[in-house]
Amino acid sequence: MLNNRNILLGITGGIAAYKAVDLAGKLTKMGAKIKTIMTQNACEFVSPLTLRSITHQPVITKMFDLNSEIEHISLADWADIIVIAPATANIIGKVASGIADDILSTTIMASTAPVFFVPAMNGHMYVNPIVKANINKLTELGYFFMEPEAGMLACGYEGKGRYPKNREILYFLLTFLEYKRDLTGKTILITAGASQEKIDPIRFISNRSSGKMGLALARAAHIRGAKVKFIHSNINDEVPEYLDSYQTNDAKEMYDTVMKESSKAETIIMVAAVADYAPAQYSKQKIKKSDDLILNFKKTKDILYDLGKKKKTGQMLIGFAAESEKIKQNALMKLKKKNLDFICANDLKVTGKDDTKILLLSSKQEIELSGSKFSVAHQILDSTININKK
Ligand SMILES: Cc1cc2nc3c(=O)[nH]c(=O)nc-3n(C[C@H](O)[C@H](O)[C@H](O)COP(=O)(O)O)c2cc1C
Image 1 (cartoon, protein in one colour):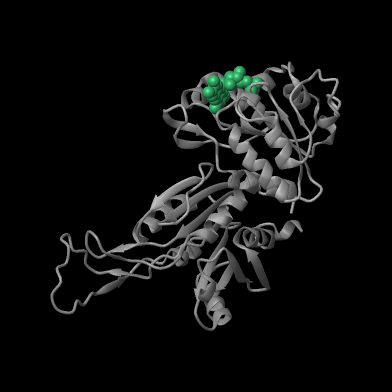
Image 2 (spheres, rainbow, N blue to C red):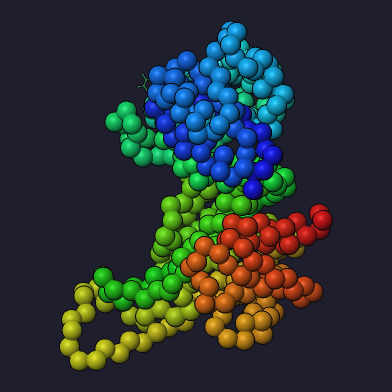
């Protein structure tokens, strides 16, 4: 997928340097050519030999090295993209200040390729106003930054500063190299997951929606530059830090959150499987086992229908329809009834898997999409939001 792409990997002296080995391996497997520059401090954490063995390409650690087969500036021109992973507070500070005192900072300075930093550091370092100001300055100048994760850090502190998952870095790189940032400036609201309707303190009814498709759409939209409001309910995967996320549990919470946030979004994609019916009564105490139990259900508020009713001019509304029969016919009925611009009809038999097949329908169009959920997410964005740009 990354065939013929030249990626210059810069590794700096952070505890997460060992994770860059896995990143280099994954990128190499995807067909990219990886040349690595390691700072002297990075070499304290991992051996250049490891990177060389993984990438089968040169690893440069010194500016003044007569034995090096690479001239000190040539990598700057060779790279399609420069990825600094992990990026220390030090390298960020150096680049922000225009310092070029080693082979990595000099190469970054001399390159016109996009530069992508993956900061990883102690939580106090990450929120240090100097580090923040450096990141802001570089962002304004067009450098790219991945947000670190929050959680337990290697230094023993809890905070934001953890190296993100390599999977997330790959998503970014893949899309950055394959797609334009064509959704910059747009706000997109995406819902995902399954609502849970409580019966008593420990029981609920729900459905099998995994949240994978909604998450794939959120990631794809974010990578293409959109501001994503991600409203989710009981999804299996971790929600990436970079999404503006809202956790909900039942249909009512999902309804209230979507209604509150929807006016700020130009596009709304409702992927979540929200219950049509909820138990009419909630039992505060656990229901004891006795004879057969009969539950009464009441209808929940229809989010898509209400969104369709109050749709503003220029706002785009996209729904999903998971159907077990008459897929196209049922989806078209839903499209019309709920005043949608597009509907993605999918067959319940393939729900929850990593790959999917979708029939994208509008009043004028019918397109079959298939592939991994991430790839289908991009195809949906191409065929809906960006349809006029083609
Ligand atoms: C054990 C250890 C772990 C470190 N981890 C980090 C880190 O995760 N992030 C960071 O910014 N600095 C970290 N540092 C500090 C950097 O190594 C130090 O700032 C160094 O000057 C960075 O140099 P470089 O950017 O040229 O690689 C760590 C230092 C030590 C001794």
